[in-house]
Length: 131
Image (tube, rainbow, N blue to C red; front, side, top):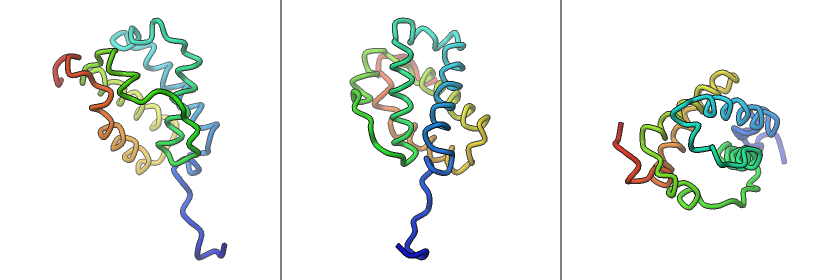
């Protein structure tokens, strides 16, 4: 490949790859689990496994290698009756985490766009109001 044929680095590469994703997931779950409105969703969850799943999913979202083999978003989240308000809170924890870790604004904007795209797969229609 010549220099003119090189492609731009993925968001995943730009933020530092697997180590950076792992750091983001750790800080993100520290925030979510400390949030009294959200912690209950994780009361009976194997958090080591949960962190691994999110790291794999976030890697894909950022353009890294796709090694995610877990359940589909809707299958995993619909039974939890997640409200729009709680979904937004989780999204804010994620964007705050990425900001605190120095992730470039354009990447955060793209992550927010993905969050908006998948919202209906995660939020339950019976999960409360559109707060």
